Image 1: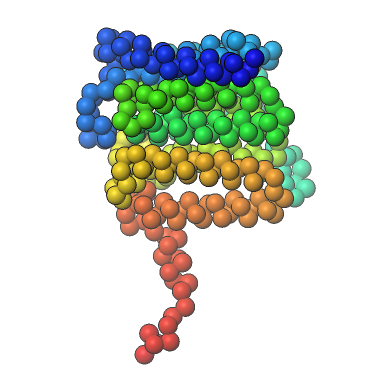
Image 2: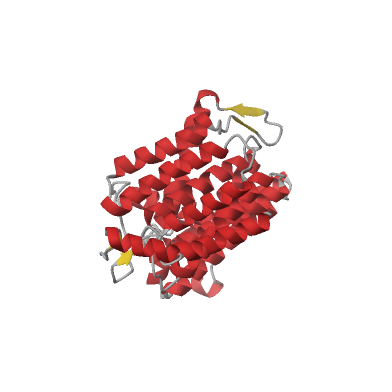
Length: 355
């Protein structure tokens, strides 16, 4: 029955997307080119509506008997409504954030989804968050929601990266014995893949904030449901799985601080912009970021099966590799290369160069 549900969600997205495209054009929900955007023509958005409806069809068919079922449905409706209004009227950042906070509150308070504690490694005992458990959980959900939204800059990029993250979460849910998280993640992934038939380069429709906020919200919630109340190292697993959007968002903040710009200031220096400037084509850039996402997902699985010291080595290596890539492509700034300069300084001096 579940495999049939996945097929239904997949084909529902394929059938609904052309209808959503016509609807978007009719109501004027279109994306116009500007200096920050890569596309050159006016494009219909709202494509995320097809993903969301396909998700609803799938989740209603399986009707999982879990306490966070209705909070997830209602919360996702609020986040989709926020994105829908923004795709039509381009609401202010404050109003958009208010919708995200409300959607997060639904699952955190009503669904009782909060990270109350983590077990520290090396026999360090337990760290209880107390009253901070709710704001910490909400910051995570809102942060991931916006991270997916920020990476939505090329045809098929956000949908593909989200699908890979969802598949990784589903795989980890199987390992950890959480069938409900696995089912919901796969349903959303199936809907996203169906939408990609129209969204991969050259795209016929964009998912808009309707889709980007929805996918980010679902991924943020599922990553907590799958890795709630565990050790510090296990809690790092969803961070690794979401390595691409989290890294892009983190270095966007660093970039704005280094350049003394407001944190909310838009720019054209995100990961995909930097890769395009290095000479990769639109399609090559998207596929390269897909590969990065898949590597993060695989690394998360290896990380989960490692010993404590093995996990520390993997994490350290991953951080160094990310920093080197960031400096190579100029994600922060062209002259920002502290680690590369450090490594160059460690090179032994050639004996001939002394004289």
